[in-house]
Amino acid sequence: MNKFLRIILFWSACWGLTEAIAGYVLHLSEVSPGILLYFFGAYCLMKAFIQSGYHISVPIAVTLLTALLKLSNLFFTPFLFHYRVYYPVLAILGEGLITSFLLLISITSPVNKWLNKLIIKNKKM
Image (cartoon, rainbow, N blue to C red; front, side, top):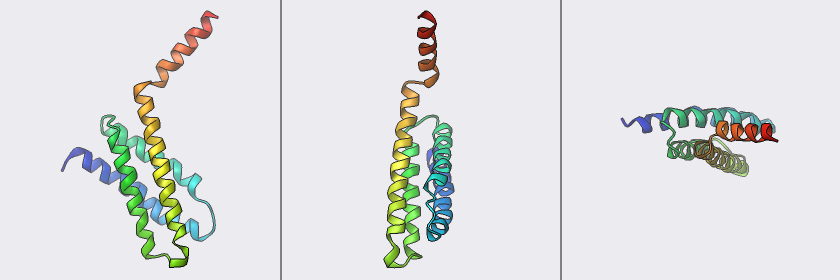
C-alpha cells in the first residue's frame, strides 16, 4: 500500500471515529463539542502532514475522508435531527481546510525565520 494512503487512512480513521463517536454523544447532550474536537483534529492533521514529508495534499485528503466518516452518523440520527450531522461535517471541512492552509503557510514562510527577522529588526531600532 502506498505510504501516503496509509497515512491518510490512519489519521482519517483516528479523527473521524473520534468525531463520529464523541461528537455524536456530545451533540445529543446539547453541548458544543467543536472547541474540544478541533484540537484533536488539528493534531491529526499536523501529524499526517509531518509523516508525509510535508505534502499539503495529505491533510486535505485526511479532512475529506474524515468528513465522509462523520456522515456515517446519518444512519443513527433521526431525520428531524440530521442538522446535527450536517453542521459538524461543514465544521470539519472548514477546520481541516483552514488548518491545511495554515500548514502550507508555515512551510512556505517558516515562523522561525519570520520571528528571527522580527527580532533582528527590533534590535536595530
